[in-house]
Length: 93
Length: 407
Image 1 (cartoon, each protein chain N blue to C red):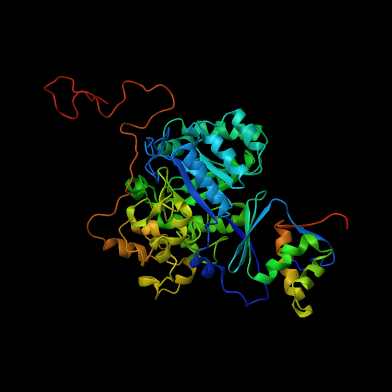
Image 2: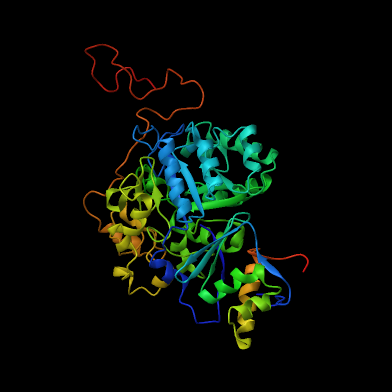
């Protein structure tokens, strides 16, 4: 799995993705690719939710209370979402 | 349903997803909705024993009320089937209503109504997906199961979708002993039409119970199928229906568990809610969308669904070293072959199913609903008058059932 996710770029949830909160986190469904994905806890849900409002993914992680030591794990989780087009880079800052 | 990636936090911190799903979700991820029992075909393995419309089928307004509920529950999409759903006069109206209410639609069809205009309309929408059913890569193999003309109908429909530029629609195949040797040929057909191949498991449900013995894959073919699936990975969709093959090696892509009543369910044409599309039997009937509280209450409060969401004990399979990979297999396959639900699948690849089947005694349960055509399968053209299983007696006094039958 690639881990070269760029935390310092602006990201957003793809507009064709529907997100449903669940007790364990959230379910995501992409209407374009017709693929399903999962967020396995509340914190990663908070990160994903705030991506579109934060200047960078790193800022979204910080806003959700992710500690520096945890950042690599969150970068991996976000890279998985990026690979399946659930989140996409926003163009222009 | 197709599950791809899981985005999770630091390793080891979260429980397994299948364990979370086992306890059920507040709403299904997707559900199967059979809009009508009416069908122009009479496939010998039809899991809903479809053919004739049921006069109690949900009205257009009732269907729209169900869609409103699904929107409220944030059900991502519905798998619409039947019968042949497109023969309902309000089919397109309901598709439009669902997508306008953010409920995605994936529908299965034999292609009978899929002309150039319908294909163009489908190609224009991100929120509608189509599955064309084909159970043989050749006319002979397909039509032996789906009836004369079915192969040509499906091919014509796929041609229309291709011409309209619909990329990635699904070619949907139920695997039988006669078409497993055609796996590569199905993949070629799908590629030729710009479609994605989707293969699913044959179940002994509906009329499938009558043809199970002749159609279900031979033990040696199970291995062939597994190896083929491993080689093709996520290129080929399976509806996660082959998890009973997992003990051959590594788990197949997707969610390897039975989702009945936990993450999926069925709404049948008269509004009855069953745990899964392969289990149309009173044992698995959770309620009806016409009941007070509607579908939402059935999903959240049905005692049947509550019991399905309790932890699995594993039963007779518990001592088997492969239980974690196959979870005992398919509930419907067990039920309709007379096996206990907490024991092995009839097609258990460790061979425990055949041993269990040998000890089944007495009658095997039958599906509760049967809407089969009362006569021979209908062909798409004019009905030839010389064919017919039941004809009036040649003479008033001649009561032999074979009288006049010269074929």
